[in-house]
Image 1 (tube, rainbow, N blue to C red):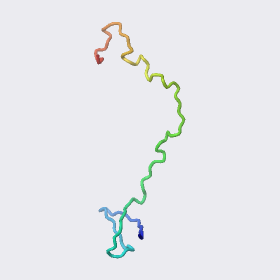
Image 2: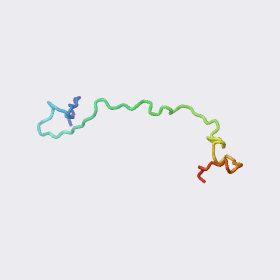
Image 3: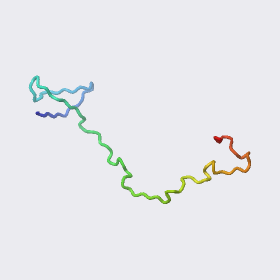
Image 4: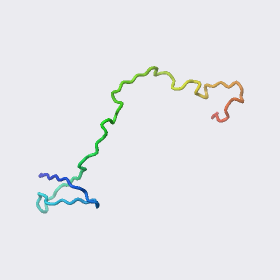
Length: 86
C-alpha cells in the first residue's frame, strides 16, 4: 500500500484540508492523525532510583514512648484528659 505523509496545521475550527493526494478517485485510504511533536516524558521520572540508602536502626520505633498517650502514667485521676477514647 502506498503511503503519503504531510505535516499540516489544524485550523481554528478543528479541520484539516488535504489537497493533491496521490490516490485515484474512489480509492479507499486509511487516515491516521497524530501530533507532529509528541509530548516528552520527563527524563527523570524516578530521580531516586539507583541512589544508595541505609538503615541505621530499622527496628527502632518511629516515636518514643513519651509521645504516646498509652505510655503515660497518671497518678491522680484528675490528671487524666477527658477526651481520651476510653
